[in-house]
Length: 172
Image (tube, rainbow, N blue to C red; front, side, top):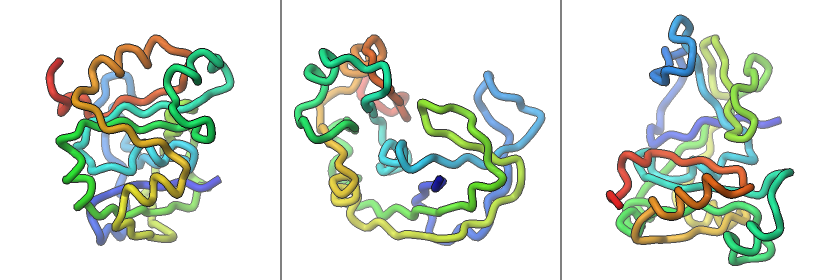
């Protein structure tokens, strides 16, 4: 298994555990977050870019596949708003890879893993063309005027989904 952290910062040498801000997580212990390779495309965007990401899961129906995927060969979609297109085109991402030995699963569908220890990356990959990286990973990219309708529909579907930075999405 490979685990990653995506950042716009180019020189992170160590990752210190941070207290989570989410109310559903234990605020008594700091965590270092990582993402597995299957869900990595959900984070191949500028940090503050709102996005709706979804992919086929073991319980996904053929009806949802037909409705929400335009390509038969893709099983992962990332949707962003068109106002983020230029930002994404001009953003460089740094992909930090971790040794997975001290990480444990936090959320299987989201692909989140956490460690309670200081972590040092074992590798760094620079991604200068985010679009090319997504296409290389066989991800369908959608550019839409507003994410809220899609977000509402996907949450009711049989697909595995992730909604990130929706506070930055254009209001409905």
